[in-house]
Amino acid sequence: MDSIEVFRQEAHKMIDWIAEYYASVEKFPVKAAIRPGSVFSRIPVFPPVEPEDMRRIFLDFENIILPGITHWQSPGFFAYFPSNTSYPSLLAEMLSSALGAQCMKWETSPAAAELEEAVMNWLKKMTGLPEEFEGVIQDTASTSTLCAILTAREKATGFQVNDKGIGAHSGMRVYCSSEAHSSVEKAVKIAGIGRKNLVKINTDNIFRMIPSRLDEAISRDLENGMKPLCVVAALGTTGSTAVDPIEEIAPICRRYGIWLHIDAAFAGSALILPEYRRFLKGVEQSDSFVFNPHKWLFTNFDCSAYFVKDRESLINTFKLVPEYLRSQIPDHVNDYSNWGIQLGRRFRALKLWFVIRSFGISGLQEKLRYHIYLARELKSWIENHDHFELLAPVDFSLVCFRFHPKGMDEPAELNRINEQLLLSVNRTGRIYISHTKLNDKYTLRMVTGQTNVKLDHVQQAWDLILEHARTIYPF
Ligand SMILES: Cc1ncc(COP(=O)(O)O)c(C=O)c1O
Image 1 (spheres, rainbow, N blue to C red):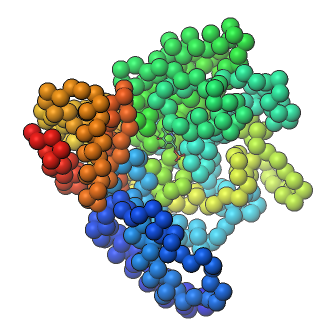
Image 2 (cartoon, helix red, strand yellow):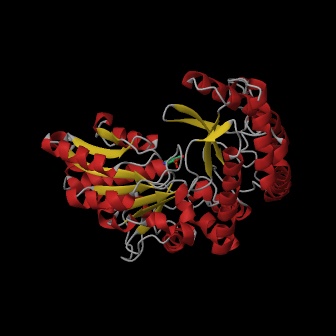
Image 3 (tube, rainbow, N blue to C red):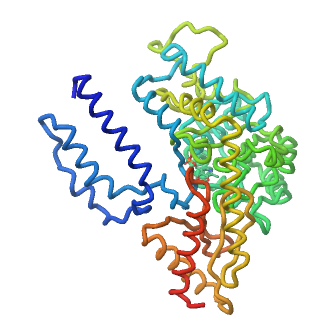
């Protein structure tokens, strides 16, 4: 398709298709229900030699690909954490694709670099993060956390590991709670620290890291000649959105001279609500902070906002300038490829700019407050039901609960029926929920944070859960 006129016609059709998709997304089974391998087996082994017509390609998209898609934008999607889009974000993504700009250096797309700096400053102001923080957009929270741990490692070793390898610096230790996201463990593996040197600190009865246990673990490690490097505290764990007591953890980190990274991947977006700023206590003493606008701020995946206090250490950790990338850039602009792992970078700031302007802070706040209200409604239905129980506090838009028929107290049996319930409701294709284990209890997780979810959707989901629970164990 090399004619601009054909492109124009196809693009118009595509926009109509997308608009129709969004108008009717609820009609698709939320969770793809295809046999493993069934898409692969329909893709020819050899790529086409001759050009194919866009109409044929698109038909195959509808017939082969679409049935194998899980519809994250459906208001019946309550699983994991959402990966939300919105119309302004989609529009910006279209423009970003059209520009096809590769934003590795200021010079390769000055507007992208400068807009990134500006919107990251906006996010900082919107969330109340400390003024000294500087932000950069990474692809994911996993990458942001890896950047934090690598920077902590380099800062602690005088940038020696980058130069000479781990060598004399073995025995570095990283700490997080037993509820921390697996990306911390992955980062520790990649950073050459070794997963055995990730110390998982016990949590209290509401899944928050116990600071005194952290203190004990660090001092024990020091006595044993280990090198405490970094603490990763969660502002909203994946399992239950528990918030570690950052205000108590931060002074421990300061006392031992340890980097404190805050993982607020999902819940961080709630900081745009003044009533949620209480969770920021202690963050001013942290070294880095990540949250994902691609989760709960209606900005297409991928878009992870990473903030760091000591930008020089971040840049010294990653900067490399081979001859072919050398250029004269003024001092006061940023080459963001030196702020992380990848060289090539997409123009992600554009979608954030569109989203923040189009919703306005008040529009974003209204949406988040509504999602939180939905979670509280669901929570109250569960609390008032004799055969269901809540398994964690509901601070944001995640509700953790289980089916607990009165009189049934055998832990293995309770786990079994809840797993059965999850499979059963997901199989209907009407909703998609996910699970975790909290205190070894099989826990159903429902997040009411999808962009378009309304009270009706949550009510219908709850009715469906009750209906299926009754077939598993009548009450
Ligand atoms: C607390 C937390 N941290 C990190 C991640 C990883 O996020 P990403 O997919 O952006 O790497 C998640 C994902 O849900 C999360 O919940």
